[in-house]
Structure formats: C-alpha cells, structure tokens
Length: 238
Ligand SMILES: Nc1ncnc2c1ncn2[C@@H]1O[C@H](COP(=O)(O)OP(=O)(O)OP(=O)(O)O)[C@@H](O)[C@H]1O
Image (cartoon, rainbow, N blue to C red; front, side, top):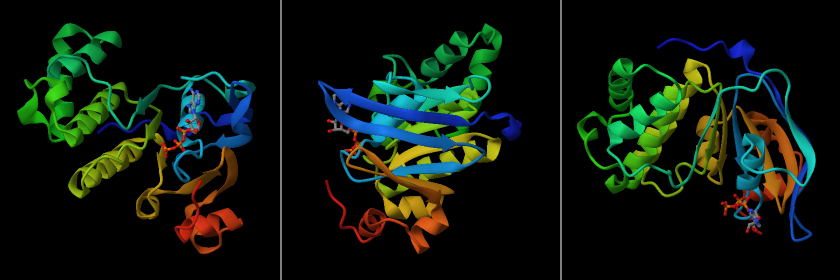
C-alpha cells in the first residue's frame, strides 16, 4: 500500500458558513478549521445539521452565507453516503467506470478494480449487479470506489447507520485503512461507541449550531458544554 503524503493535505476552513432554507436558518454561521491528518467525527442528534455541514464542506451545497476555503490546493476528495449511489452495472463495472473517469488506461482498469474488490472482501461478487448487493456489500463497494480515487480527504455521512454489527466493523476497518494510507477522515455519526473507537477529534452540532470542537479525549473526559455532557449521557434530543 503506497502511502499518501499526509503533510500535503490542505487545511479546510469554514468561515462563517451558514445555510438557510426559505429564510429559516438550518445551519447558523459556523467557523470550523479541519487540519492535519485526523479522523474527525461530526456528532449530534438527528436533525442537528451534520449532513448539511458535510455537504457544504465537500462542495455539494453552496452556503447562503460565509465561504468554504481550502488553504492550499483543492484536494482529491470522495464522499460516501448512508445509502450508496451505485450504477446499474456489475460491481466490477462500477469500479472500472470510476477509473475510466479518472483517465486510467483501459488495460489497467480491471486489475486495479479487482484489487480493490479483494481488499474490501467483494472479490466473489464482481459480476453481481451492484444494486442487488446487500446494504453492507453496497457500502463496501462504495468504499472500494472511493479507495481507487486515493482521496486526500474522505467524507463519510452516516456510513454505518443502516448496517448490522459485522458490516459496521467492516466499514470501520475500511475507514482505518484509508487513514493509514494517508487520508484525512471527516465522518458523521450519532453513535458514541463508534466515536470512542474511531475519533481523533469531535465536532458536536446541536440545533444547527456548532457547540464544541475538541480532541476526542477531552470531549469524553472533560466536555466544555452542557450540550456535550447531555449528549454523552444520551439526553440530548432535538
Ligand atoms: N437542502 C435542504 N433544504 C431544506 N432543508 C434541509 C436541506 N437539507 C437539510 N435540511 C433540513 O435541515 C435540518 C438538518 O438536516 P441534516 O440532514 O443536516 O441533519 P443531521 O444532523 O444529518 O440529521 P440525521 O442524523 O437525522 O441525519 C433538518 O431539519 C433537515 O430537514
């Protein structure tokens, strides 16, 4: 596994980034800087604004105020969603398609795609239509597709919320594989156990506001806000 140059990943600055719909603020103006080579977990109860923050950061949504700025080059990025969006083709063809888009010569596509299928435990399923794969298999295929892009930054939006424990472990192992290869991870979750397993730092959102951004250890041992303490006790609901 060739390691990416983690020192080259540019910081991501959200400068007063907010999003409103029909005049109603869904994400209040937010300042957030994600830097270095970390696994950041964006947490908060349902409806807190986690997905919005991810879509804004990844550039899928344009903020209604503020701006999203990469401090340096625009990095290679991928995003993995709760429900993967897969093409109506075989698992293998979903991967060779991505390689074609990225200009990889035809003769190299299948070997690279098969290597990725193997890595994510999908080798036996290469000919199966992607859309009939189980939820966990689809998520692993989405991760294999992202793997081929060699992202410097990987966004994952609730990638495990519809999965059983074994499938959750497979996704978490994959997230750690990305991280070991040199990818910065930004992932949403409302699962505290998952955060304890994975996070280097935590962003807590509540009611469309950023409440806290701190190292995971601080978050769990000495949270600064009443909201974080309530969230850890399982009492924070919207
Ligand atoms: N494009 C949009 N237009 C209008 N409203 C939106 C849009 N995207 C999200 N919302 C609303 O913004 C609020 C925050 O949604 P978001 O999906 O970010 O929450 P979340 O923290 O990811 O929640 P969950 O854990 O349930 O996925 C919700 O009330 C949602 O209905």
